Length: 162
Image (cartoon, rainbow, N blue to C red; front, side, top):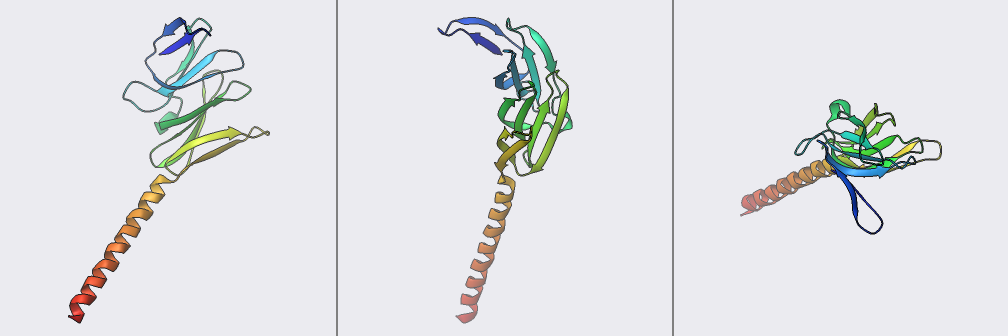
């Protein structure tokens, strides 16, 4: 759903789409693009652009290709109205680009659990930050196993000494 509200809080229009929108951004053309999951309860990335009256300009139901991104964290548009989404795959951080004409640009993944955010550099580069939750969990389990092993060795030493 996308809803347009005037400055006094009155609804101008509301439009419903099959995608489960999570983020919205308005480009320098003053037209909104909503990005979310392909459908309610689903996964993957879909994007829809509407005109000033809420009519669909374009729809991309497979913006991330085979990645099926989750955890949509941040959406931004560059000066050319290309759309970028920080997200994750549960085991990797990801950033996805959708071109201003609705075609999928690219989706990149990198180590970590999901991307928390990003920003643009002056030379059109993209800087991405994110978590390493998957790594932290592995380290926690490894630490937990080491702790149990040390505890078991201490108990064994006490048994041998008594």
